[in-house]
Length: 220
Image (cartoon, rainbow, N blue to C red):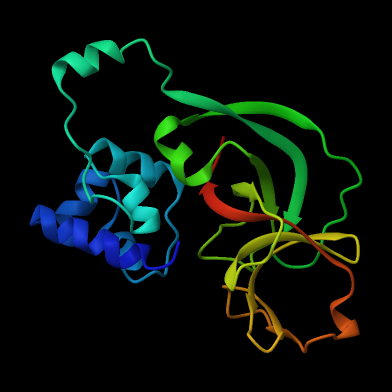
């Protein structure tokens, strides 16, 4: 979700409105809009949905690809698509990942599902689950006890927020992989220390990557 803040700023400038007016349209305080544009606050699912409502192309917002704004469909096309599905089901899994100390989860159990708008499908895909976050080490990006959307991945990118098992404990942290092979595990909350593991370090333990955090929901 790199550079999303600058893209939000571009949208606001395109609309020709102040941060205050833009915030009113989205139901957000001016300070929250400012923090989003500065990449200090994550784009949570409810905000993405509101941006979609005002015509923003969410795929462009999250990836930088395509058009900034959605094309206006013709009346005929709208009628043809009126009976088409507008959402898809995402499983809610009964596990917790720790933004702080690790949490041990022995069982994974789907407890429910929730509906996600199809406009998110091109970015998130279908292979995602929703889990609960415990701890405050990823604040302000991810609030304590939030529900997060996790996209299953098999390999570590250069940087992102990931869910992973480390010595049998489930964790949520921002991970950076340097070209030298060094692994940096850090929190967005400055009160927590950054963990640095040189290439081949035994201190890293057995790290199993489970997924990348692609969204956040305050409540379900």
